Length: 156
Image 1: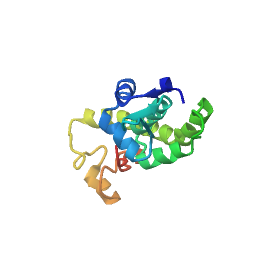
Image 2: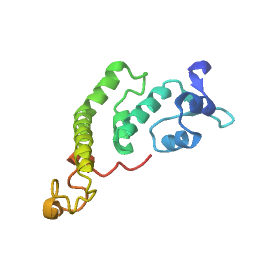
Image 3: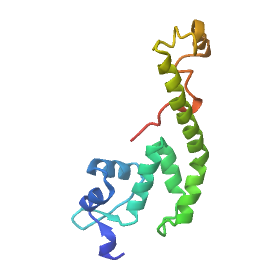
Image 4: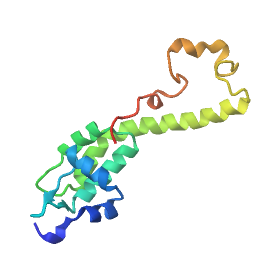
């Protein structure tokens, strides 16, 4: 591998927008890899920038690190991933994203109606929740779309 294809941790921080600590964490978690110089300094393949962009995109839509790791492990290690590789991975998350978009739109539209009534109390609201009937559905914000009631993913 040509030395110009290897980046220092400082280069990676600058190019990726991730702090040093995140890069070291992702390395420990097996999401990215490095080589070391004879002096022990980390060197990253330039293609690691694509992996980091993928991690950022996945995390921003709520994909947990375990699922990100699984997806990255399916990528070829002998070559830089192609557009087709990334498309294959993103297809698996498309249905989830569509569901979350619909849920967020429903939440947005529902907030207008709820806040518009002026009572600001879901327990006494005669329009949305008369006699607190929603409490029989269980704990938590049962009025939210199911996609928005999922627990948040763990990890960074």
